Length: 53
Image (cartoon, rainbow, N blue to C red; front, side, top):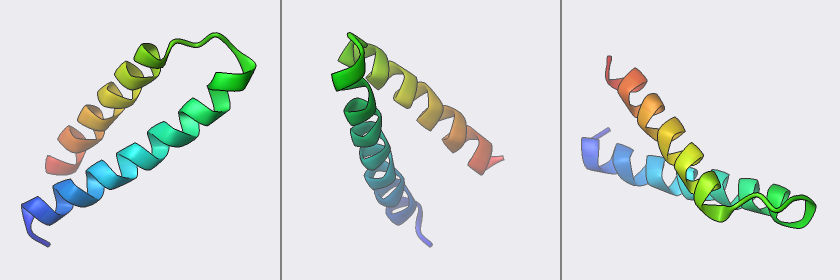
């Protein structure tokens, strides 16, 4: 699979994960959206680095 295709797929999965996280936290807590985004971004970067090695 080409790198561009991998990145596109990864971003798509990331957005789906973010959507689920937002849905889980929005109703139940006052969890800030920015914190969710930062956590997801950090996880995404960690996964990307892990996959490259």
